[in-house]
Length: 237
Image (cartoon, rainbow, N blue to C red):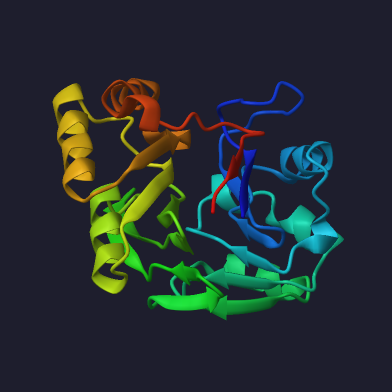
């Protein structure tokens, strides 16, 4: 299976554009998040030879613009998709999906959505004066579990611990936004230590993790640190 990072605020392939947001293609037909805007999403997909028509399933981690921004453009190109979200997502988000004729599935619990692919279930926190809910994607591979996060608003450690409650396999990789931009060095080092305790073999922090936190993960994880950016393609077995 391949993981292809389509949108990110870090760049791996110079042909692509960056944006504040995240989007990753899992296999050939599952899109996790849609980045900040449709121009970058669709433009980067074209440069990576990914057709919107080939997408069958979209998972939106949480209802923030930098993860939902490209969805309208994708649905204009292909409305015959299933869109997984949470019941707590805004009515405007739900109406947008249904307005394009796509099938909206509100799934708040840990569940399998495709062979070897799962949703973590809803985790919530308080953010910006209100409740914010998020879920993550889990892929079961021969190497172990891969957890892909949007922004990890509920806490990256909380997400990993929740996954381990539901799946017994070891964790091969955690990648995506870890939301550590406002954390000091000592806190990030404690989080890295907890990653180790939880048996996370590889780490691929990006997006809202913050450059200083990313450097700490890189220093601690060494050869098991994964550089993530728009255009990155990862082969997993």
